[in-house]
Amino acid sequence: MSLFQFELKKLLINKKTIITLSALFIVYAFVGFVLCSLPLGGKTNYDIYSRQVEQQIHTNNPELAAVSTEAYADAKVKYGDDDDVIDDVAKFIPDLMFNINYARYIQHVDEYYNGSPKDAYDIPYGINVLEANIAKMEADGDTTSFAHNKLVNQLSIEKSVGEPVYANTALWEKLFGTWGNVIVVIMLFMPLAYFIVPVFSMEASTGMDNLILSSINGRKKIVTAKLAAVLVTSVVVVMMYCLATFLANFLSLGSFVGWDAALRSVTTYLRSPIGASIWQYALVSAVWMVFCGGFLGVLYAFISSKINNSIAAFGVALGAIFGSLLLSDFSGLFPTALHSILKFVPSDMAQLSKVFGAYSVFNVFGMVVPYYVIAPVVIVILTGIMIFAIYHFQKKRRMT
Image 1 (cartoon, rainbow, N blue to C red):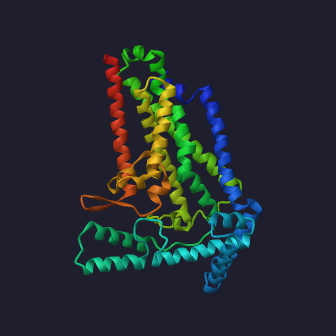
Image 2 (cartoon, rainbow, N blue to C red):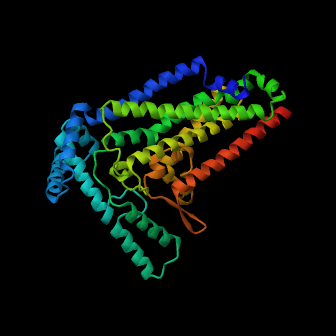
Image 3 (cartoon, rainbow, N blue to C red):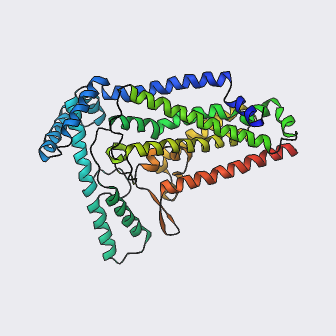
């Protein structure tokens, strides 16, 4: 048996791990079902809603917009301004669900051109708003600054990608919620630590590392085999999560409607700078999750290589992820100069909605570079540094 096979068996291909993975698969499938079927009122209500969308969406006329807007306003009067409460009611009333979603779509189109007074982003938004800001800067003689180039770039992207569209993407909205928001950090990347942290710390806690690291293969081959096993384990766990949530999400309602719609038809990605269709973005999402899984797997291995106790290593690994979540959530408490750095904490880079959900750029030697371009570069650099450090740590242990 090769060293790689031996290490993989210890991490992944053993009775304990297989049982745990099977249990996790059931949990992930249940979560996918709950987060999809229940918010949409079950299959019967969803099917009625789908037929209504199919019958009316292509009309796209002012009369329909007026009716939907009025229905949405009436719902706010009747149920309050909390959209979550309105959605909880509307999921059992397909007509209301359609009108509310269509009214929001009309509102989003208006914001695409005119911006919004309640804009949640720290950057200007809206074709007319961007053009006005650019014109003002150019009138003041500012045509070369990064701030000017950033707005010009953003305007170009907005015109290229186009305005939000309305389509029946409710199922995909829920799927991307389980893949791209903080839930993926809690449900996937935290449990991943459980499988990875024993890779070095288990042997250190039993004293076996002294024997292993003094063997002929101790310096490089065993460490390489361990890291390869870590990456394979990370990929398997991530793909299991994707498969379980995907199957539960769609089998619960028996539909793939909306797969060919534009990404901007999904509420979370109304301002995404990516001009992709939903199925294309779903592929990107799966690849990105696997990519981040490999990065976090190496991070956990790095922690494991420095801590001799598996339980302590697991606690530190969870602390690293949970701590990065807190840093992100409370970034407003830190100086503005640190906000850009905090975008590269592990929990943020692991969330698709933060990387691809809105226009976010950085000043790199005067160039406007998107967040989704810099993030993978940072991940590769950090991964390389941690791998180098792991080899160095194990070499140092062997020599001592």
